[in-house]
Image 1 (cartoon, rainbow, N blue to C red):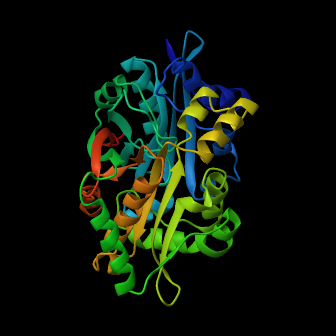
Image 2 (cartoon, one colour):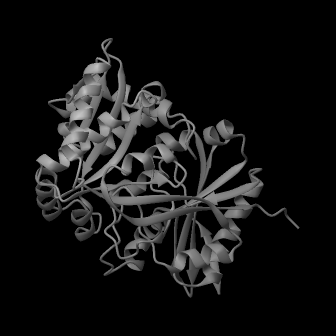
Length: 376
């Protein structure tokens, strides 16, 4: 018999957070979240819990946890897009359609009671969270920023009536074998033509003090029309800054400013720490810190987190500047390649950027959607 229990107690919270580590034990591709950070989602003072309604559920069979799911009603996203939508995330289950159906049914009931009409996921609190179900690339290294799942998850989700809504693509980028020097030269000429200045901070504190608010302003403008985005308040921005400042190095944020010292574009990368996190099972231990610091100091792979260009500069060809900077990075460093995170399959401006690299599309992720059933 399958029982669904809403997560309320500390014991249930621990079971919810720990379940994926049991499910993926021994899997060489699964990269967990930081174990301690996952408990933040249960804190009423967690910034997202102030703008979202959430609920977490466990599935138990014969007294053993066999599945979990979180539901998020992202009120600001619903208002922006004119939706009455519940998101599901942190969905993990054994290979059993009945377990998955029981989880989805319980979450759907909760969402219907809240007046929701649509059911989508996997999507997190914002588009800066892990999102999308992996449907291609199960034998590929995962970035820390994205989620791995078993191939059977797609079957479980579709069996409940979900259909494709959007796909994202991921790529490995290598320096082009031809035209590399030409791309760098074009980049330098465009900088001069538009009077733009390439800026890199010398410390993380300088980024926080002088640049990070400008990064989020460009991000909001450049990404506002993309799927699933919503405005981020200052408390949420500060939370993201705190999460990522440990990983990012000063040289990993490349910025372009105009003559009036207004940021017009940026590229943000992260040294790949996936293997260090995987080996530590998401726990911050002395061995993790040793491997983490090694990978951060001398990365062989960089995760290409975000590229943002103001629309008026994108039309001027400033995207070519960002391409030239990234190509130059691959040429002059010891990096093997850049690993992109999610790019919508219909985000043609970003996909056009990738045409200038030698590349391999190695992963695909999908978000699913269904109409919430009316109560009988």
